[in-house]
Image (cartoon, rainbow, N blue to C red; front, top):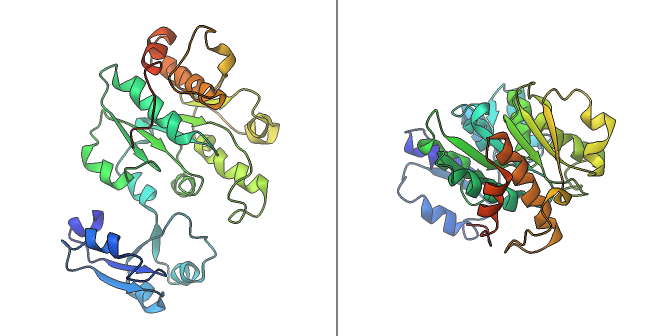
Length: 275
């Protein structure tokens, strides 16, 4: 939709069949110029393309991507395109194995109450490309970012100004060769930050506490914990894991000059993710 609406000539290829993809294809009917190669991939499509947008979960060693690289084709992801429109100092990025969606939504709710212009996007309901038309130079974008999407930040050598890691536990080990590879993929969110940026880490989260994870990081590291929340605080959002998500949000809010009391007042009313 993004490229077709800008007048680009778009070809879509997917191993899924036309029947399986029918709901998505129906959404693109207003762009009759789009062509499709479905149920298979063809090397000819990669010969034809000037720019290839890959699904973030497609491995770099995919034979078609390797072929495109040999042809010196430009390969991007939707997040990589987004980073060409939005500055890193506009981004509050949230990653982690669990709690990304909730924490992103909580941060959005708290910052919204201050009158700031904020957008919630990323790996949560709204595509980053859909968000681009709404972003102005003073917009803050809260992004839920998967480990796959963080590869775009590595490729562009940038990290969000505000970065949150909720936790890291074994996941996607069918994609990453080792657990350490997966941990390092999460580190990208803070890897290219500078001394004026913020990295929020959960206190006592073992993978992010190790010296090889912290090595080379240049930002202000802020540790958060549910133990820092008042004993009298009783949110609608239940579960000890959500207390950690709330604690992360309070820490981010404080970096914007929002008091703990004000943030907790907003968070006490939150009960579900908006998407």
